[in-house]
Image (cartoon, rainbow, N blue to C red):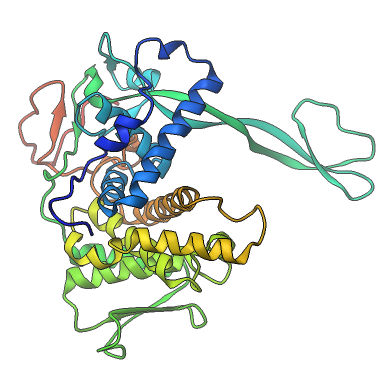
Length: 387
């Protein structure tokens, strides 16, 4: 981790990144919009490699907006920082806010994220055994066998969204950082144990590794060991770290092996696992910053080391072209793994997407209301206004 005197903000990155809400940018073509978003993300990731503190800022935001991809979390932070406003908390499109009884304030400029263009395709097998995809509705060639329909990504587009702070209307309970009740490490431990179970791993609390390591993942026996000598919070943190390995660094980790972040490249693999643990615990209200220091401080060295290894192997164009490519891949892997864990452990809050309120409306009582003063405490818990 960077020294305490280092500026833990994205100001340097946002200053250099394109101002997507600047006058005239609303008339960008879709291609220009994607280019601007991509350039901005590149700038942020380049800064994150140079500064572990900037990497930690991205993880902090991912803990709040964990239902979004890592790249879009970075873009949302960049745009909010450019406006000099608070970090995004709950984000949705114009019509989605309307469905929840809120409207975008007059004069507000959209935030932009990258969303996929999709199309429904027929998967078919031709008489010679060749498999193809053709648009749904297009005539199927004679003697071809239809294998079913599938939605596929055909490209990318910019999608306009707005943070809750840019809207008004029906009061909406919005969890704020630091407002949650004290986290229950014992409850988190049990929910993390459920994640291990769902992935087919046995969990053993043992003194077997005492003096060596606090946690250990064995893919051959499909088991995770956690030190019996640890307290509840430390056990939860170690288990979250080991789950990062479970989800990312197994024998079939072709992506990690491609760019040097598999179990064979422990430096970057350890940073990935600790980044997952940091994000998961942060989402549950536990700040493990000091304990994560040794891992996150090695972030830049691990990325640069993986880049050097890739160049030495000279295995062709499939390898990452730069450390920014590695950072982008790592951020995507970390946030995807964190989401997979958090969807099971259910942290307080919405994960950044308003639609999550319907799926899991549990929120802590000491939260802030958007638009109006919050209602009186209910004996049945927090009251959610709107649908």
